[in-house]
Each structure stands twice: as C-alpha cells, then as structure tokens.
Amino acid sequence: MSNPIDIGARIKAIREERGWTQHQLAQAVGVSRSAVAQWETGRAGQITGNLTRIAACLEIGVEYLMYGAAKQAPLEVQQGDELALVRLYRACAPDDRQTLLRLARRLVIVAAHEAES
Image (cartoon, rainbow, N blue to C red; front, side, top):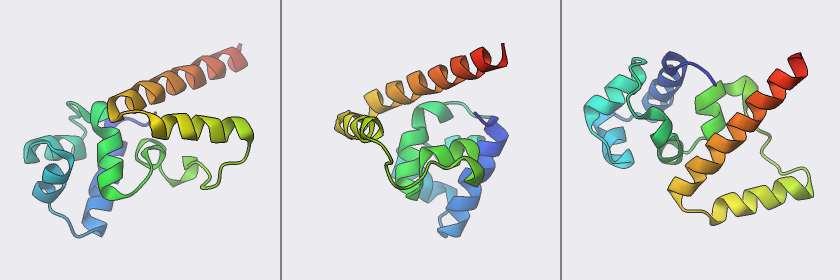
C-alpha cells in the first residue's frame, strides 16, 4: 500500500479535479473538514477506514487511491472466481467491504513475502 502522503495527494488531486472544496468532500464522506485536510497532508487519522467512502464519493476505485494509476485493477472481470469475489463484495455492507479489502491486502503481502523467499 502507498504511504499516507501518496494517498492524500491522490485524494487532493481528484477532489480538485472535481472542483470540490475540502468541506464538500468532508460532507459527502461524513467526516470533518479537518479530517480531509489531515488525509491530504499525510497525517492520516482514519483514512484506511474511510477509503471505500472516499472512493465512492469521488467516483474512483479504492485501488487508485492506494496505488495510483499504475496499479489500478482492470475494469473488466476476467475469470469466474474474480466475478464471484466481485459479487460477494457488492453484497456486503460497507464495513464488511473494508474487512474483505484488509484480508485481501494481507493475503497479497503474504504471497509477496513467500515469493521473495
């Protein structure tokens, strides 16, 4: 995952592209304006818990916020298992989606460490 400064810079860039103020993004996400200011400067209080809502409000993918354009997931689902995961994700409540994303990130990290060994 990118560091909070990179994520914050992407949030700020997309927010400004949309012509939104920090206050408008804060209202859309349901946080204070100071929380948005903290995210954008890398002092990321509760950024990970809000990534799904931030992405939804800005109409972008969570992967883009985390990794930037180079790591964006393909827009089309490619395989049956992938489609099943997307359907399960969409059926979950927002908090459960965050849990699924955290688990998936851990699995990717473990796989990367095993590949290095």
